[in-house]
Amino acid sequence: MSLAINRVDLTIGETDHPYLTGPWQPADTEWDAPDCTVIGTVPEDLDGVYIRNGQNPMVLPKGRYHLFDGDGMLHATSFKAGTVVYRNRWIRTRGLQAELDAGRPLWGGLIDGARESEQPGWGAHGKIKDNSGTDVVLHNGRALTMWYQCGEVYRLDARTLEQQGADSFAGKFPAEGVSAHSHVDETTGDFLFFNYGTTWPYMHYGVVDKDDNLVHYTPVELPGARLPHDMAFTENYSILMDLPLFWDEELLRQGKHSVKFHRDIPSRFGVIPRFGSNQDIRWFEADPTYVYHSANAYEDGNEIVMDACVTLNPQPETPAYAKSAYGRMMAYLDPHLLGFHQAQWRFNTDTGMTKFELLDGDLVTEFCKSNESMGGRKTRYTYNMLMTDRLVASDGLVKYDNLTGKREIYRYGEGRFGSESPFAPRVGSTGEDDGYVLTYVTDVAADQSECLVFDAQRITDGPVATVILPHRIAGTSHSTWAPGHLISSPALV
Image (cartoon, rainbow, N blue to C red; front, top):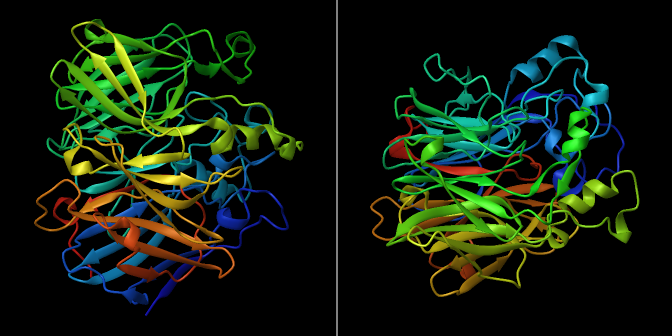
């Protein structure tokens, strides 16, 4: 029997905000649902949890609302021996708890934080709330959530989503925080992370071992304050990013955070040995673009290869359709104006040269995922969200073969919007794409959400199982597949 564990009276009220309505309409209830209806057959050899993070505001910020302001909410669908359980929980960050205790918002959001916030905030921006709603990985057997502006990391039980509080890294958590899109090497159990800020050296890089001990932490000297969003890693190296989309330096000295694309500054990618220092970094230059999300990286002879999505136009002009108070925000978030495409970088360690290749200049795709059990090792497949225009939303799933350039597409249908789609190896998997791809889909007209399970080798055939969730969920941030054998808590299904 599905149980509504906690229902919250959201205070959003009547609104036409594009990121509080439609596919981004927030959920108001936390559920335990062990009896979801299933269309098709849940595979017997699917063992683990599909966990997805996302913005789902419980307390709206003071001032104007930006997509990235919403409180983090985890959705977890757990599979074991053909059975399935769904759960969801808000992430009880220190900021959210302070607002619940106060009975009102205490911080402004990304747009108005400096003017509206009543208290100091977190991260590189400052004066805004760490909602931990950007990212989620599995580390040391538990789910770990992160925020893109560099804040605390929060631990939750990967199956029950029981809150376990902010992590301390055995008492050595860095004062500068941790950025979302830090990564876990499943082979070693290492958690590889970075952070960034507005004071010298502007970035740090670190390693937390499989037992949650901070074993390496080093400054990374940059020319000034930057806004990196992701990193990548190989078996022996990590790849850090110094990209030309960052705060206007003159305005930053005045305490104003205005992002500017510096079209005359090259993109730089820093290759550092896993336990290296600032002196060990080799910087590789490329044309000025931006990278929001990487899929994987690996060593290939004298080259280090990174598969990721490029952003060809990181600061588009405000389009005619968005001449409102939110016009600039809408333009900065429009996937088609930004130019999201699947791409590959090759860094030649002999010559110091960079080769960039646009693997698909046609489809607008982002939120790229690969087989994370092979992270840092050579892979060829990525699973991307096919992006709609005007809104951060996806109407399809794309599987890329980055070796041959082949792509396979599955569209969800009119008014149906999907989520970031991780790969789940089947029990006893014998190949890179021998397993499943999962996504959450929201049908706006039907007021319903589902978890879809695809055979990764037959994407175009459609889902082999559709799990009907007990409620409608809001749009996506990031996700992970937590393999059953790596989760510290016992299976509850």
